[in-house]
Every structure is written in structure tokens, then in C-alpha cells.
Image 1 (cartoon, rainbow over the protein chains, first blue to last red):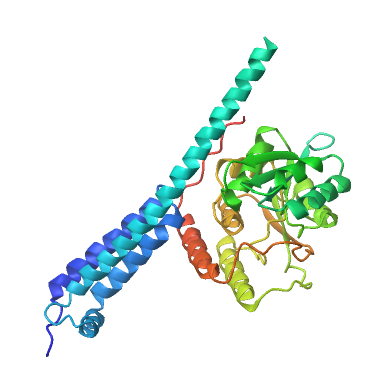
Image 2: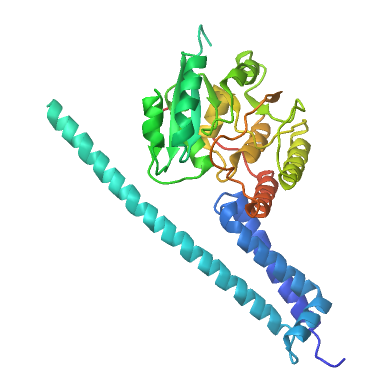
Length: 124
Length: 241
């Protein structure tokens, strides 16, 4: 072997951890605490991590392509980090949209309340 | 249901000012006893005004909720106002009022809680792109398997519902592309689903909300939702408003 391989223990631990992630996401969707729309990216993250963790040959090959010579599991970190960044970015856009909508809701509510009060005063 | 059932048409509309007036007028002409509620889903054109001018009850959402949220607003309206029968039509004119009796009949006769007008059940011409046809086939196969009942058109928004079905969907309705998941929910809650062949018009204005690029995301989302949906507990219905 020219390049170093992935230690077996690392593969097992990483596979278990990714499976736990997938299970947690699944349970969150099932109990309606996470909507499918926001879960897809998490599911993708979990699946990619499971595949890369369990498929040792694949991880070593990809590490080779990327020029990671010393320690192939470093690719796991890189991929995990990439997905975390994607999820965070996605959430930033979601939060922006929510806060815009929140403003609209508050304005609409205040205007409705004013209209209701005006009508009530006119009647009395 | 005593005497005439109280009935309402629910029409979700997003920027359909050019089509909505005619849709409402046709519905009211077809059945003067049919109330029409148009849910304007954050439209930024004259949809709400055009619908009101044609004689519809108009509910304006302050921003775009997407088709599921808009349709559920209509279901809640119908449920809270005590309607016995609701029909759902799209605001773009592809659902023809003349076909309504076919969709309503199984529900009126007490044979189904939800009847869905299908473009494909009768095998009559409805043109569509190849990729869309494949998607439609796959979804039909998946839903048919889960439902243990043959279903051909899982994305049809041309539906009739009785009060039992309204109760369920007023309490819980799927969000992004609700028809497919709605079918599975119907089956899971042991409501009776019936498909009837209908003809639909080609869309008059605008395009389908499902574009080619989105369809992969759509399929993934729907399949995940269907799969997870199988493991979900049933919803507790709302109290009557």
C-alpha cells in the first residue's frame, strides 16, 4: 500500500455516528418536528456520510484524488464540514424569509385591529 | 344531509387575474347554489379584485404560502362555516365546471369521502412532456401500492370532499405539493377515496408550478414524505369552529 488506508475502527465509529444522525432526522420528521422541506439536506448529509464511512475503498480512492496522502478519514471531516456550511446557508435564507413575513404579518394584524376598533367606536 | 347540501367551491389562485374571473363566473353559472371562495395566495396582481367582481368570497393571504397552505385555508373556511360538500378547482381554468357532476356524484351518493377527477383514468387525451409522464407514472405506482387501490392521477387538484374529509384536511394538510400526500393521508385515515375520469382543459395562462428543474427535488421530497408518512400517527381532528 502506497497511501495510508482508513483504520477499521474509524470506519465503524463514523458509520455508526452517521446512522444515528439519519435515525434522529427520520424520527424528527415522523413526529412532525421537522418538515420534509428542511430535512432533505440533512438526509443527504447523512446518506453521503454513511456511504463514505462504510465504503472504505471509496474513501481511500477519493482521498487519493484530492491528494490527501496521510490520513484518508480527513476527507470525512471535509465533506461533513461542507454539508454543515450548506445547511447553515440554507437556514440563513429561511430565517431571512421568515423575518420578512413576520413584519408583513405584524403590519397586517395592526391594520386589522385598527379597522376593528374604528368600527366598534362608530357603533357605540 | 337534509334537503340541499350546502356546497362551496374552493379555488386557490396565485396571480391569476386574467383567468380567475371566468373561473368564478363559470362555477356560479353552473350551479347558482354553489358558493365560491377564492384564496388569493399572496397574489401581487388584481386576482382578489377580479374574483370579488365575479361574485366570489375572497380570502387574501398576506404572503405566498404555497399551494398546500392556500388550499388548506379554503378547507378551514368551508369547515368553520359548516359546508357539507366542498369541491376544489384550480384558479387557472384547467378544471371545467361541466365535469363537476362526475366528481361530486360519488361523494353526494355517500360512496366516497373524497372523489378525485383523473385525467388519465379514462385514457382520453391529455398532453404532457415525457419527463412529467414518467414522474406521474412513478407516483401513481407508489400511491397505488400504499393505498392497495388503483390510482392514476396523483397530482389532480380537481376534487370533491364531504365533511369527514374536510375535518381531516382542515386539521392537517401537506405543504408543498399536497395532492399526492393528501391521497395517502386519506387512505391512512380510512376515508374512502374514489377516482373518476374527467377531461381537463389545457392551461390558459401561466405555467405549471412544476418546472423541469424542480421535478427531481419534487420527487425526492414527495417520496421521503410518503415513506415517513407511513410511520406517522394519525392526526387528531380539530374542534368544530
